[in-house]
Length: 635
Image (cartoon, rainbow, N blue to C red; front, side):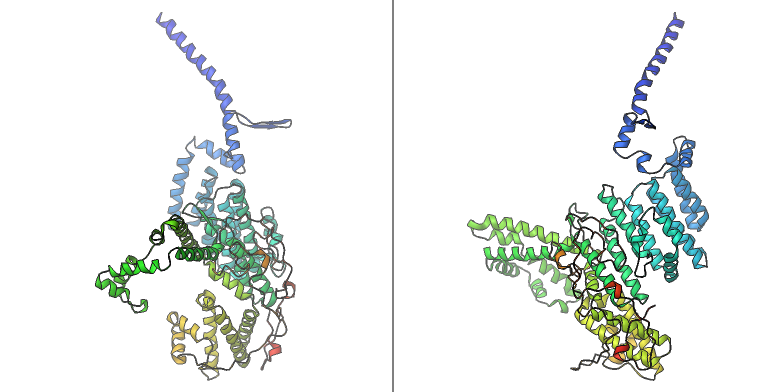
């Protein structure tokens, strides 16, 4: 009897197992494709496809990787973690071959582990490349880093972080390495590499002033593709949206700066800065998510502050003089030592009384709510609502200001505006030619050109004093030191009326030779005479300065001029509908800048630079250059 019960129990178990196979098959059936059609598969397969979770949706399937996954018997996560720890050991030992092999194994096990692709590409482009002495071999390994990222993008379809990092290495590693001059030239000539990249980004749209692909502009193409992926619904993880969107227009700014350093000046540089200004303004219109849970547009800073001024004025109209009355009441309640500290001007504060002064200011601060509550009954409710809106706007202003400071929005907006002016073009042309003449040992010509350049830089800093705090001012300080050495060769000293004494003063703390020069010069002499200047004749930019606010029709909501303003220097996120992105064209295709495709192409105003006329002419240094001979020189 017991044998029969055991037998039938086993039959029952087998029957239940067989029955369970049918729902399991219905749930887990894989999707299939045939010549006649396709089968979406079971419930799990359909859910994976709907949520883009299957490997086919995430990226290409690697047969070798799938085999390794099966070999780990479901423990690929554990295996990947062990290999990840091993990679750090190799990194500490600077065993780059072991690190490379380990990271490659991780990509087979976990192809959707984004950090591995970033680490390995960085390892190839930055760590392995420097192990070689020949810059050509270094460039080769930089390319391998970019190729590795391209493979990661194929296996992680349209991942914004990988796309963005590919643009970063293309621009920053090739454009800022110690060998950047050689790297940039190798990149321009590397037609095979361009052909391989064409399957990912349209390299032909990243041509520079010479009609060849430029690493900064090709990097911008990757940034634009990353932004399109984000707009299509991909999620950005582990990257600040503020920085993510800033790198697109910064590529144009870096390109403009680089070609000037290479001696490509005149209207070519003007046109490039014009496009960079448009890109920066467009960035200010973008809607940038913040850590506070709402979006901001960096370009709306001035508009928000204007709204604050209007609301404050209206609140004061509800209760004229009440704010000062409340403040005086609070001052009267202060302790005597705090009241004394409050009266001390800020410039006279010391470490001893600074804390008391700050505390007194805080205790006598009058809030908008306090003013609103003193408004007569008939208007008090309206005043309280106005005070609440005013508080919200002030909070928004402080947050926009904080984000603008992170990307230096004001500075870059001013820089893009200033670099388009004829004064800036002349200053850079004179300085570049002066350095060429100096290198050629033509000291008199070099001195004349240096001094012509200083007068132009003086005009720029008078109009844009903010630029004196930037890194380009440090480059100018180095040129001043060369000028000083030149005069020493001529047994002369820097003249007492040197136009850039204030720049020397700002730079003296970082350079002992400039400190000595400043002590020699003292305060600049005041003179009513305008220094005689040289006018470059051969390659003159347009007679009128390109207006920083051009094109006028494209002002952001904050009513900021397009190319120059917002006066803050940052790319602003904006919640406004984003125009369709356009791939950047050549430096002369105006105004092909990020997100500029949807904007109406402005007709070219009289002051706008003409890119096709911008090639600087070669000029031989002469003993006594006249104004008509001061033309820009090609690198």
